[in-house]
Image (tube, rainbow, N blue to C red; front, side, top):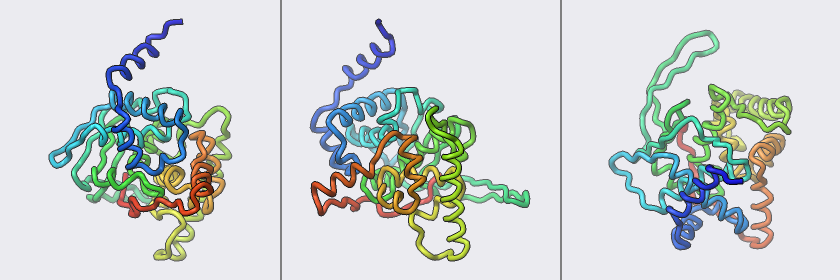
Length: 279
């Protein structure tokens, strides 16, 4: 049966071919893609091309992108969706704005007593509900390794979270998943992090302390770690890792372990290594 959607997809891919050299550059920049099968790489490349066709990248002065830059960003955005059905997961926005550096944006928070606090905060990324994703280009360039930092995945995880409304750490789960299992795993780990920080504010946490900011940030940060430091996340919060594996339908830890088994010295944690404040 003829499908307009399938015809449109084939047409876009035919009009925007990716050369082997360009994809090789993307792969070199993104060690966290190591271990993907040839078919997974092909699917990811195709989805990245479709992503760039559907989304508009707006660059501010100081940011210049070539084809490999654009594809590197898109591949990271599409990695979380690699094994999910093509259901237009990023449906509520069409623009990605790229800043040449971290940017200042107004922040607003109502505390438990009802007092509203307002301030200006420096951010490397933000995701607006039914609005654009904003990224600092240096943060995008620093991402891609096995180091627990990935600005792109972080902000696009917020977009998945927002499919249910205001970001609260509960994206739309698959029918085979149980909300009770998800909330139990996430809440327990979130509470444990906050308890540790309350007792020892300056002691290093197993994953980035920004995860304890609120449940939405916990989901975004753990999504980063799921793809870029799955060993650290699984060791710290195995139940959270298990729920994210069910949601994303991937097992990056198994992929990393296969790489390490085949190459005992494998540990590409050279990129990133920091965690700027994200939205």
